[in-house]
Image (cartoon, rainbow, N blue to C red):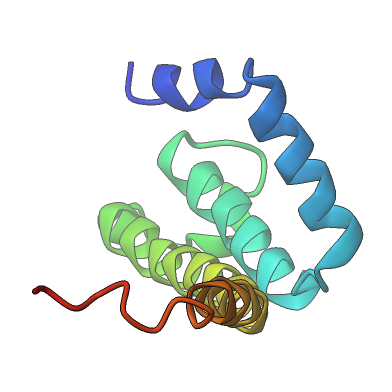
Length: 114
């Protein structure tokens, strides 16, 4: 139910085009993504008692605790991915904003109220 809006947004051609442009032009932080993906698999294995459970959980009394402890690196990895992507976007946005300001500098009295 919570994922439905995210999936529905992917039907937008403009959004899909922007995602493809990002993959082509932005350096993707692969190690942060691998951290998030690996710990997601481990936390999911612990939560749903999947095949990796015996490797990461030795006492069933700590099942909920271990699941939560492996969810922290997921959040941290996703934070790093988004932070590094936004950091790369910032110079692009500043350049676009500067070009917009340069366009308005041709009209020096545009913001004055008389």
